Image (cartoon, rainbow, N blue to C red; front, side, top):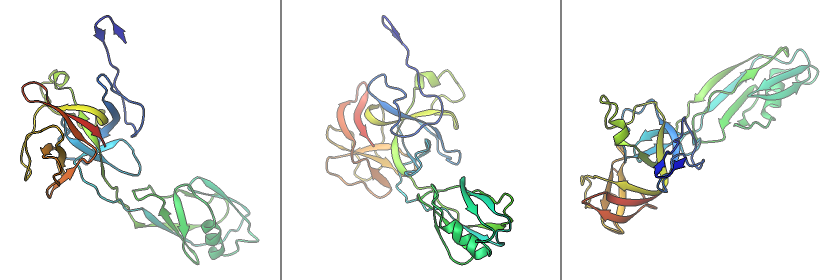
Length: 270
């Protein structure tokens, strides 16, 4: 909305997904909407790089710039009894018709389940066992099972709990002038509240440190790096390689440097 020289930008409210609609775009900065991971103990401040699950894209961010592979969740179903009444069972939301004259043993019921096609799972196993392996390398909730009136019973056990992977997603956008209205939390985002993360576009970095080996003040064409555990951004000369404990933001570049006013303008493409 704009009236003469007055403008108002409506931000994103709630969690969101990467590559979604721009949530906050007053100066060409495109953002993801999301919230901080409730298990993240770091302070979510302006200008730090954050990660999220590379598979689920659920808009839940953790401070840092670490690339880790996820591990797929695996569950094992052991079928205990045969089908005694012709009808349906429901496996993770998909209906399977069973026949009491066909699936006459627990092994035959398990074989029928293994023959299903499920959206979330690849099914394997043998005899009375059905192994549910997540199709994506991340944490999946256990498959749901409803045997209805079929007479089938079984037990489900966790084989592999699964692990959420991480990949850098963008840089936290934050308005200190707005935050100053809350004297208790003047310089960082409140955990659990919606936040915006820039993944494509120009971002001004007003201040920086030089703690990484070989780090320098920003220069046009220089390298942008982020600390793996805190997401703090620093700079290196063109062509440099990120030192141990740091991640090179390969598709980011320094476009302008104005140390007496705005700081360093980096183009973000994460």
